[in-house]
Length: 291
Image 1 (tube, rainbow, N blue to C red):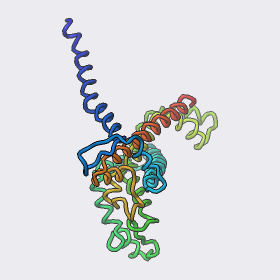
Image 2: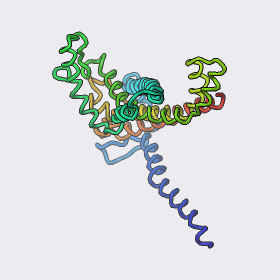
Image 3: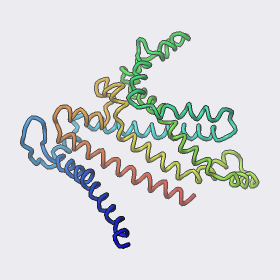
Image 4: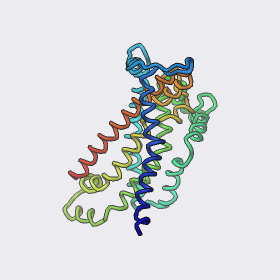
């Protein structure tokens, strides 16, 4: 009996040990290397203090534009996925015909690997032979045909559009589950009190849906800050550096052998993710409690 009671402690220590070895230690090592001149051109690794971070935030470098691109991508994808996901969820929660079919079709892009999605849309958005421009020209809308992935004014917008297309179905499913957990008695009570559709949405749906919105917002936020595949496949940061984000920049820094700068960028990204996640959870939890 004594030995059987000790098993959970063995599992706990084993789990903590694995977490320490595979997560904590590599993270601390990466943080340390961000203060060094670690690179592929020298076997020596020297401590250089905050020089890498000064370089990242220097006006002479482009790194701050990559930070801005990451934050811009995160902001717009969070807003668009949440709004569109909520609209789709509310539409499919009501008495629309063929709800199952529509749910599957909207969720289907979410299960397709981003690499595959990127390759498909790289072909679709090709300015010369892509399906989108060919269709626009065929129906007489030539003026709407654009150089989607090679024009500075459209490349980043195209990337955001592709990411939203892929991810909105996943957000819809989570919000739909949240909507279906709301009892109809709340809406019946609101109707008795004379509430209209908008008042029901504001005073019943949103407060009771807040736990699901917290989950989707945090997921969208973390996804946006660590975006890589869709940018890498569609534009590889181009044209020029117009669509480079933090993760593509980290990838390029490591590819060029500038490991110290790459780990410094990783540390900055981790800091952004931690701070953003913390404040979003605190803010939305406060709204949930007040609701």
